[in-house]
Length: 161
View 1 (cartoon, rainbow, N blue to C red):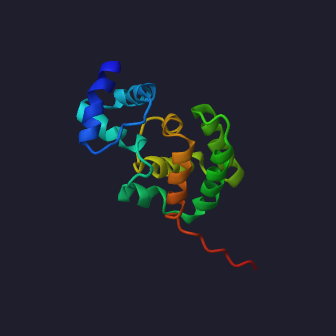
View 2: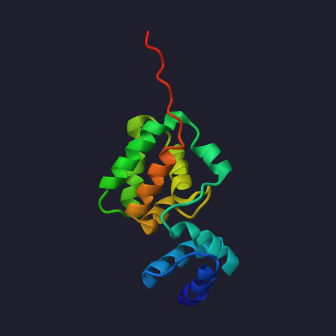
View 3: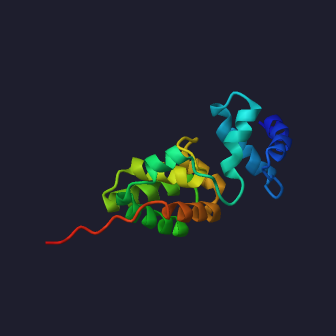
């Protein structure tokens, strides 16, 4: 893992990904998380992109599929607020918070998981979401989720009657 981390650092730089300022132990955790899902260093570099930078580009198909249902917006907004307060900001806590939020809003946990994955990575697929969020960190996760929240349509109120 250490050798792979050493090898991908310059490749990340060549791909336009800034690795300066990241703890070497953190990069090693990213490698360990991604390694089982890739076959080449080039694929590892590509899959590592969401872990760097402040924002992500959302895959259009993934966004259309997982961020287009206005019914999820209240639960997603509540999840963003819950993640702001989550302590500690680790995979176990983040999963528990998401599942509790889904239950509270009568939303399927899977719908929130998929929306959160697209919001935080820009992609429909990733390693375990909660481990990804932990490595991305609270600040960037919240920022990315707030950006994605704006993509979710506001569902009109149904007429009461």
